[in-house]
Image (tube, rainbow, N blue to C red; front, side, top):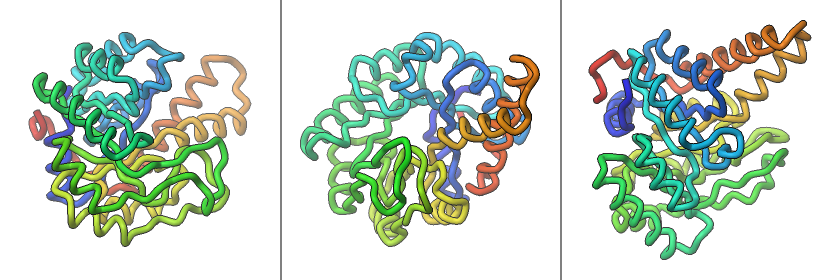
Length: 282
């Protein structure tokens, strides 16, 4: 069933677990994510990033995401990830995404507040929930664990930001980054504890891939309610293809989908994601 993240996060906060946000980029990946969540009776945030619009149009992503979510017996939120252009975010809302992210984290604090509040006001009028980001989660194709361009979130700024914008969840920077790591990132759990104690809205972690199961489990149990995964899915798919040397395209696709499903299953366990039966989130 197609839902927003609001009830999902309330259940996650009550029972202390995180929900994976799985970024899809084609029909196969989206279908694999939803079928895996359905089989395991887990809630899922099915995410589509603005950056992937060169691979699939927003209209196509909305059609695929809504169709799969509506036929699922598990709660599935269709989420726009890292929306940086207001026009794209508003289009996603009109197309039926139930959750959107406004990423103005590289702007000044004041500009981030202004842009995030404007999107929150627009989305809330249409019963859509909004995620924003404060601090900065760095990125790169291959990162030194101790040398990324990430900037930790200041909890005083985060409290002010949440109050001024009215957003529904907040992506925070505590040491992760987008992309591959050399070595293990150092997560600042003291910053996480401060943020979780200070903020009344759910916390989101970007750059979950390759951050280490122990780190991610500790994040899930320490107040993070949504953890974004992308790189680990495509890495697992490529590893399966390379190791098994498929004889044809159809075998290749099967291997990739199996690897993606196994990776999502693994993270449901790491994040302690609880079962959420039909009717638990509407």
